[in-house]
Image 1 (cartoon, rainbow, N blue to C red):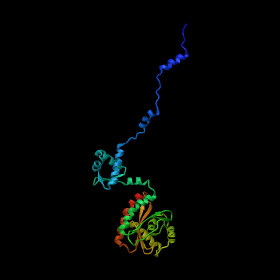
Image 2: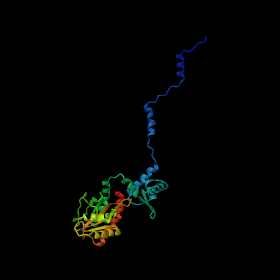
Image 3: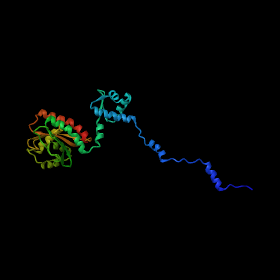
Length: 285
């Protein structure tokens, strides 16, 4: 008679044959999770940031070898990083002096996170430098409508006797020195331009023909002048601040008393403002 094993005995034998399951506590699993969450530091990225910080804080051009020694970076590695940063336009290279400085690309990258108010505030110190040097009031005007401009920033001269203007005030588009810059860029017919001109109120007599001659002169010399037409006894000089597409976005205006600057000094101011305009564009736009 053949004996049969009971089902219970077979189950016990099978269970005994299987290796016991290992139980892992949450505490034991934690190191693996921590390992996967570790920050991986990419040395070239760190060095690139250190180089840009060095150039920003140094404030003057530096050669690659100087940067490498100052930051204890391998000279060849430093050179390759600098060359990459130049290609990305966040660092500029002067081939004559073999030096590097921070580039406009870095400025634009940072300024993308700024509000318009912060951008205008960043432009103010540059305006203040000219206001102090020429004892004039510097103003920044912006187009806000099809036929209006608004004063967004006003930096007064440090002189005791100076001209003050209220920020936020609006003027007709074709008014003042700024108007002579905007007028030819409005894309309007002569009839429409003359109709707009007739709505303006000038402090000194001015015909549309005279006005347009001044517009054409402004196009030739790079800046426009209003000699007491907008406000009696006041002269203003305006230069365009164009965006990357060449569109007129702002105007930088120097406001002074009519007899304050002679012709040579006025022309010098015009050139100084024209030179500043691209820098303001990189900050504001």
